[in-house]
Image 1 (cartoon, helix red, strand yellow):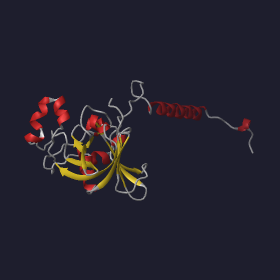
Image 2 (image 1 turned 180 degrees about the vertical axis):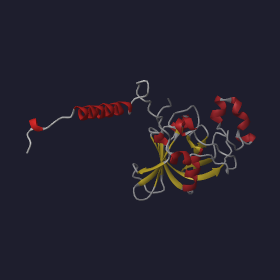
Image 3 (image 1 turned 180 degrees about the horizontal axis):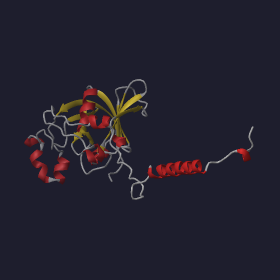
Length: 237
């Protein structure tokens, strides 16, 4: 066995190894830098393709619905299946006005959760009711109290036949009507093209969902179906 002093270091080999070390170091440095020495910019996060598909255009509707720009909606308000936080029986709709969520309770401890936007009327009523009636592309008739505040809406009064269905109709593509003790509460779950208002309090309306979401909810909810609105007394902000 040779001792360390018996090992011969070839000067040419030493230079070769030094060159490899230098080159490897340069590669490591260049892997996280741009050519001008600055850190490379992080790529912009892209929306999940499944949500882009979920909120795609719906050209086969009576009034073709444009796609939602999902980048303008907080992802927490995208439609999704979650663990049920309500404890209610399957088939029950629960609106949580503090968190801007609507839950449709499913079997086996799950719930379909939707994001909602809330208007003044959306904060005025709470309690238990029944989805007694639902309508595709509904006519909108503003209540007398709203017409008193906004006289320009008189042309859409019940006496004048209301506002015809369409993309600009405040009830959107679908509406679900809440009754309590056999009486219409004037409280609605309805669609809206103003998807950027989901998760927010706005000046008017009840409980609004993106048109794609209200269509999905409409298909899942038979009449009559129980509904609970919680924390409805929260003031508008």
